[in-house]
Length: 61
Image (tube, rainbow, N blue to C red; front, side):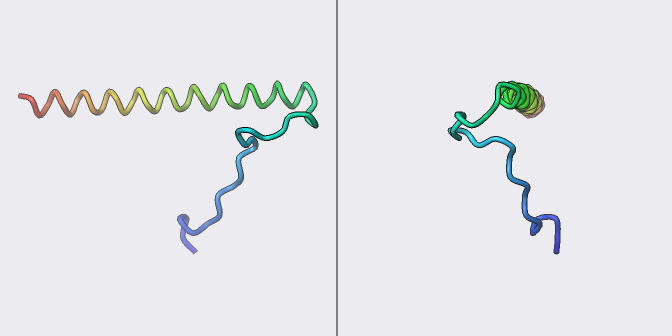
C-alpha cells in the first residue's frame, strides 16, 4: 500500500455540521482550529502568488 492508497483521516470538523450537541469549549476549540487552518491556507495562497509572480517576471525578460 502506498501513501496515496492510505485512507485520509476525517477532519475534526465538517462544514455545516449540527452544533447543538457541542459544548462551549468544543465550539471554541473548533473556532481556533478553523482560524489556524485559515492562516495556513492564506500562507499557502500567498506563497503560490509569489511563485507565480516570480515566474511571470522571469519569463517577461
